[in-house]
Amino acid sequence: MIPVPPSFIAGVQRALAHPAPGIDPWFGQYYDDLGSELGLVTYLRAKQQLLELVGGWRSVAGKRVLDAGSGFGMVSNLMAAWGARHVMALELFPPMAESHLRVLATHFPELVERISVVEGDVKQVPARSASVDLLLSIEAISHYYDVDAFLDECARVVRPGGYLLISDGNNGANPGLRRFTVDLWERYEAGPAGRFGDREVGDSMLDRRRQIIAACFPQLPPGQVRTLAEGTSGMVRDEIVRAVEEHLAGAPAPARRYRRGELPRDPLHGYVLEALFDPPELAARLARRGFEARAVPHYGGARNDLLLAANRLLRHLPGFRFARAFRVVARRR
Ligand SMILES: C[S@@+](CC[C@H](N)C(=O)[O-])C[C@H]1O[C@@H](n2cnc3c(N)ncnc32)[C@H](O)[C@@H]1O
Image (tube, rainbow, N blue to C red; front, side):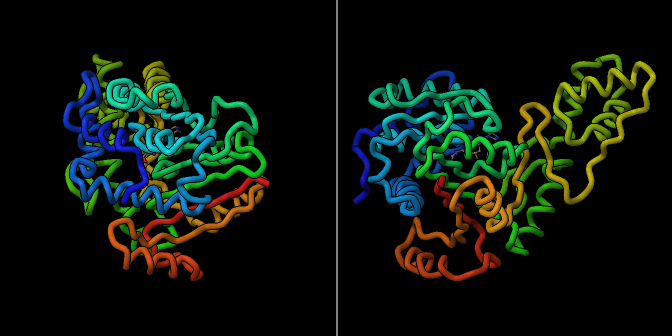
């Protein structure tokens, strides 16, 4: 028995079966799993189990929630369906925020009044100090460029007694996952596109920079465009254009080449890809900002009760070596 209103289930099913006009095509792929009953139940169980760390799904009722890096917004929708007084869905990538708004208006009209979809960066949260009861960062912190600025903002906007809940699959304390992810970073940076482990790699960051340079400086030959793209790793669009302009005006060519072990950065939107975290260290950074914080390893359990029971036991054991994912639960002092 899943504790969600039938209107929420119906909204998800309609949103996937009849995508609202103008939504990003990635929406369907992103929520592909929710198209089957098993997938939807698993998703809801995962969120229900996650919220157990901050008082359970029932405790969401009446709360002011901030969903930091809300993507296409299904978590925000679910929080509103669970009775949140207000949810701010804060998202950096405009096509995702715009798609969220359209899906909301078309398929979840009963929730529209209680959700604000805001395009913006978590490094500067557009909310008053101490105005948030529950701040969620779900599979998003590993994409934030400026994590410290985000943590500062958490300390500012979460009210005393309120909670921050971070959930992420990039547990850097797991050596196998760390090795895989460092290889994945290289692949994201330089390609080629295609399958890598359980990930699908799209256009490389190098290609994206090459496209920016070719579009802004059509007079340059392809070989020079490639060299400049290689020398502007980690830069965003404006920085790339400035570096190339300065070079064309006589300065040395930019020499910011990618080195193994660095995080790839999307040059168009500025997010990073799959940053790794040492969970206890992340909790310590929150403790220094006025939170009572603890890191919890996560071993799964959304699909099956045996694994859930094991997860509930294992998460009390010290050590993060074997867990793929982690959560950080923090209460503002
Ligand atoms: C993997 S998605 C997760 C989305 C959603 N939380 C979920 O659980 O489905 C991560 C999201 O974080 C967003 N993001 C990355 N950096 C951000 C930032 N600095 N500020 C706001 N959103 C950001 C990305 O655009 C992306 O939509």
